[in-house]
Length: 408
Ligand SMILES: [Fe+2]
Image (cartoon, rainbow, N blue to C red):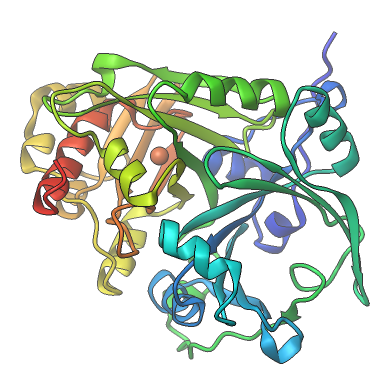
């Protein structure tokens, strides 16, 4: 008999002032028993990016997305080859790295892929147990389990390969209380915040947590990666979208979602489907030069305020046609939501409903130069879905952008 236990909150969630009930609402956290899980995962540790200019990117994310700078590593403290900035919003942690010395491998990575996600790092309670299991089922171990120590304690870590040049670093930070990881120093934000700055006030962040991270993989390889997450990481299958669900006249894709036992980590995996013209997934694969992370969905408890703040800060969102909101079928399907439809229409926020509840979501345009990684902001009200009902409206909006870029 399986015993259900309460999923403990992470230190990051406690520090961010989030409760289990809030996280259940925000990211669909569920209770589960980790004892029989061959690869227990506590949650996301960090989303790590390689960018062309980490110095400016770190400032941009503070200014535009209201994130807080909390740690740094660079030439000033012993890392001559690269600079890394660690930023936080709620329990979400982003790390931006860029090459400093001309022979830095990060610069080669950036040359191939542009700005992008290199590591979806996971917090785990037992690195050795995870790696032992991963190895036994044939995963590629990029870094064997080892300790990294400084005056704040010890972090045990290892890394396994996933799609493209992306990796999952596994981190057990239960014996560490320093800023981020050994080698980093605490950093104070470089952006002055006024008292009335909404993004800076506790509980008024523009986002609270990472909800899901989507991977785009090559044609015909989605099931292989679903199986990887099932077999190597013990992830369970969630929703499944195939064929007509997400086909427009021109482009189509297939998508399946895997999740960790507690659902804190959710990875939808997309592959292009054969269609009349180039799909958005094909465009991504071409410009990222391979499989990679397509979007990071960030949970917010007030999407209207998030969109207003980010728009005022210069973030551009995909436009949703008025017809989306005026469609009687949509109105009937979504029923009552917490705000008038007009408020959603004014901001281009999408709505989807399933048997468990509803969600509000919106997608921004890629923040880098290449049409690759972008963000979604999501406000869940019971729904554990991913906006399946919005895929068609959304893809038509993406295709309009693709057409402007000459890539459709
Ligand atoms: Fe998403």
